[in-house]
Length: 178
Image (tube, rainbow, N blue to C red; front, side, top):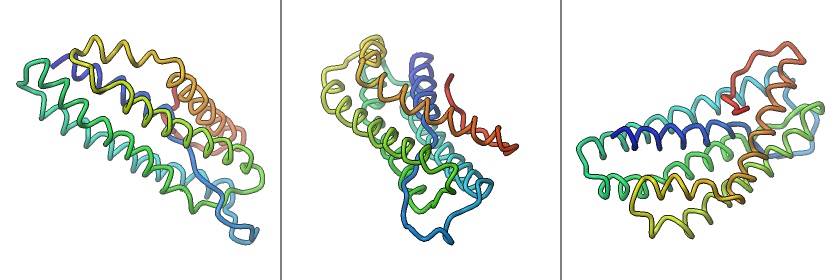
């Protein structure tokens, strides 16, 4: 059980590290949000993603509470796509946001980084999870350089978003990893 919780915590941190992304959806400047409105909506999307991830964590914990390691690993592997889908939904939730001019470059980088992180997660899942039989093996494969690079880029977009908000006296907490 402790190994399951450790994995869930690690995975939750990976997801939380990238809780800022979106996509530009229009050219009309009158539709652009103020920076404060933009970050308020980003925070709302982040909170919704955190709730989805927490629900997945709870389902995983319930499924593995009394399971042997092999069964718990299988349950974890089955839930892995749910985490990816949750992150994908987060990005989709933000697609309708029109960032103000001062956040456009950051917004574009966050979108690209988020899409790359999702692609890396999907490829990682497809290429690595089938043969994993123990939590030790599961932990080892998370050191994949491509996966780590994708999340480092996503982390940086998150940190940059929080920095821009702070510079403009806007309080947000996107749970970025430092």
